[in-house]
Image (cartoon, rainbow over all chains, first blue to last red; front, side, top):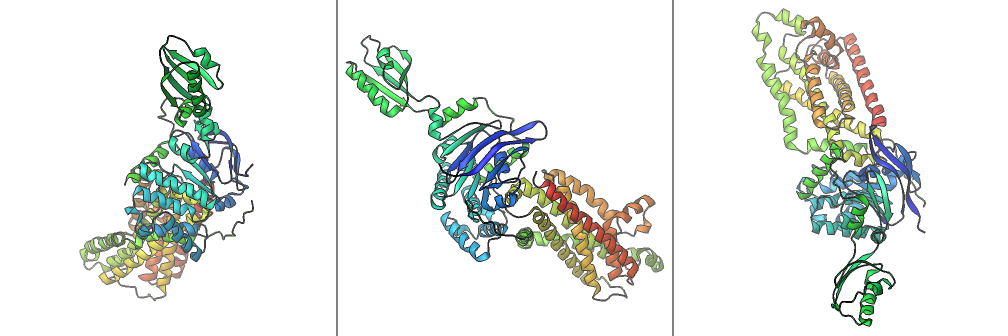
Amino acid sequence: MPEEIIRAEGLSRYFGKAVLAVDNVSFGVFQGEIFGFLGPNGAGKTTTINMLTTVLKPTTGSARICGFNVLKQAREVRSCISVVPQEYTADEDLTGYENIMLCASLYSIPKNVAKQRADELLHLLALESASGRRVETYSGGMRRRLELASGLINRPHVLFLDEPTLGLDMQTRAAVWGYIRLLKEQYGMTLFMTTHYLEEADSLCDRVGIIDRGKLIKLGSPAELRAALGGDVMEIEIEDKGTDISEMLSELPKVQVVGKDGNKYRLKLTDGEEVAVEVIGSIHNHGHKVLRMSLTKPTLGDAYLELTGREMRDEQEGADQSWKRRLTMRRARG
Amino acid sequence: MNLSVPSQNVFHGLGALTNRELKKWYKDPFALFMSIIQPVLWIGLFGKAMNIGGLFPGASAMMQQVFGTTDYFSFMAVGMFSFVVVFTTMFSGMSFVWDRRLGFLNKVLSTPVSRTTIIVSKMCAAVIRATSQALVVLLIALALGLRFGPGFHPINLLGVLAVLFLMAGGLSSLFITIAIRTTRWETHMAVMNLLNLPLIFASNALFPIQAMPGWLQVIARANPVSYATEASRQLLLYPADAHKILTDFIFLGVFALVFITAGIVLSWRYLTR
């Protein structure tokens, strides 16, 4: 079992007396994994990050990062983590290089070491040619890469990414995902990220926690979350001979007949790909001919909607948070 | 896992954060130009147009009694130092609100930089900026005809520098303290607009306190801007009265100390919410 580098116990946070933004959340993150919080806007993802990164105090509960308590050893926690916030925090009036060096001095990294790391990071994130330009002139993708570079200057053990691809176009998002995977592989870094993009959680995260209305409702690998829905759906159409093969299908292992319409059958399978082949084989062996078939795997989206419900979330977010989100999305396009 | 945390002094990152603030000003020629042009206009237009000495020719004895000098332009130009300091330090609170709003503050809060350093860097930047702008105003005023008093000695300039430091330190701390919990810059702007008018006009920066109605005199005598202006005038224009200068320095020192302390203490309490 790998070591837990983050351990949160019963984290809760109230804003004022009425708003419970995070509600008794407990989880562990293993060293070297990409762990994602998936949830709608205002679910409590950023509040959780703020508590883990010592920016907000939990109302109750606590957490340990790299063995340090976020409340009692805040300074130690801060020196082994780094945050890439949802907002673009780089100073618009400074150049990319100056921004990275500013971050370096916040971690008291000696100048010569910082210079060497900055060059390395600018190269890694393909920002070398733009490093002398003011950040004002950067595109959304360049800003996001600069935020990543700044966040990596202290070689953090845990990197927190809050909505790392918010507002970016698909090409840039794919590139950012590539960098995130690279960080995990090249530096063995642990990454804690939040997102409300399902495909992002699905393709990047080793484990995903689904959070909604401040509560952590499900935690597991994307495959486990999909499997929890009860497997894949197979639809087949056989040559019409007037016989009902439902009973024969039901007797097959890992197969459940959930619907029949004339000579069309709807089945639920576990381990869809392998079982589907066996299903078609048995139908043939019983002297029937399969005309058409389709196999649909549930998406993480299906799992997500099943767990969080379908109603829209209009009023969960505070005004300040939603202003910041809109600003980030505007800048991402710029 | 074995992690060694590098030992850091309380003020690490102070230089970098202060420089970040200042770069916005000194690397932007337009901002630099604009920050100097305003006091120049005030000195030029207000100081020269309000030629009070010229309005009442032959009233120099009265001028001397009311303004402490026969030269209203010099009187007003020294008052302009305070004006510049008030308007420059006002922005230290504003940049704090923006840092919070744009997420930079949260980013810095998650680094090992101490809360005290974050506040002190804002104060340092404001003090450096305000003091240097006030010194530019002094040079311009000299060029436009400011005349030092009979008791002036170049060493007095160091005294003026100290006055500017204390006033800028106290005022920037006051404005930052107000900004520390504010999330909307509109709110902060409204508070600033409410404060800067009385700070300037309910003081001796433009007109002597004796000429004000009684109730206004009470406010003006509690206003740190009055003490800073009075001290600068004593050092530059009047036959420096050591007793008055000492009183002014004590008041300014206490004012700066109280608000710098308040800013730092509140930063411990309110920066981690």
